[in-house]
Amino acid sequence: MPQPSRHVTARLSIRRGTKAHWKELNTVLLEGEPGWEVDTKRLKIGDGATNWNDLQYYKIGDSEAAESFVHDNSVVPEYITTVSSALEYFGAKFKAYDDQGVLEFTAGLQGLQPSYVLTIAAGSGGSALDLGSQVVAGDTYKPITALPFTGYAFDYWQGENIANINASETTILIEGDQYVRANFKLITP
Figure 1 (cartoon, one colour):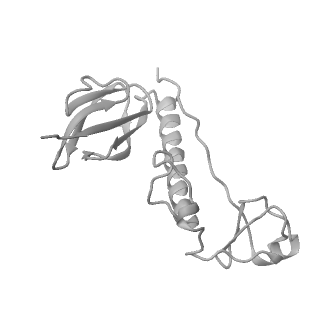
Figure 2: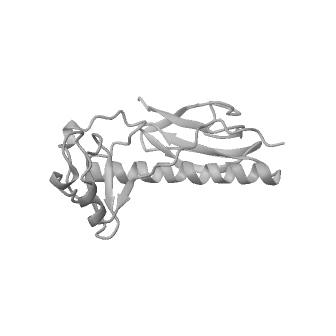
Figure 3: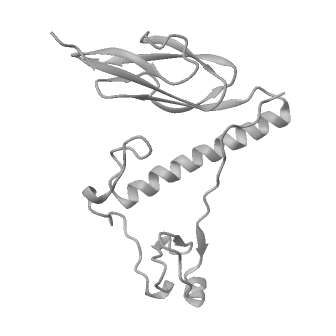
């Protein structure tokens, strides 16, 4: 019998309507809440106080100053520096979670082997094969490989169910959604 999912699947839904519908409704969107005009393919983002008819349309390229966009490079990657890139990033992330939820639900109905999301990351000084997130069959061993840059050496793997955390080439047992990170150290003469 398939194991239950260990993550919450969410579906992002953006309020939408025609230009005429929005004009007639003239609602106040919550702060940061997007509203989509389906016929004009234009977006407005609420501020929690201004009525729809008084909001400006959002234009690609509108952004906060890059230095004011705060993140720690683990939840939000360093290349996310504008509102538009953040919308694209989180939209893709929610789509991946949505797809994964459908896969797990279908597997459970059909009595198939569950699948999970494996995220492979790398610290400074190197990279790894299959970097990023991927859907992997559950209860299987997945090979993982760390690739140090010139002047660096592999140090250790961070995560759970890793066969040998000190080997640059090893395997990970997939028993649920998992995150692993290859860590590297500077070679000192």
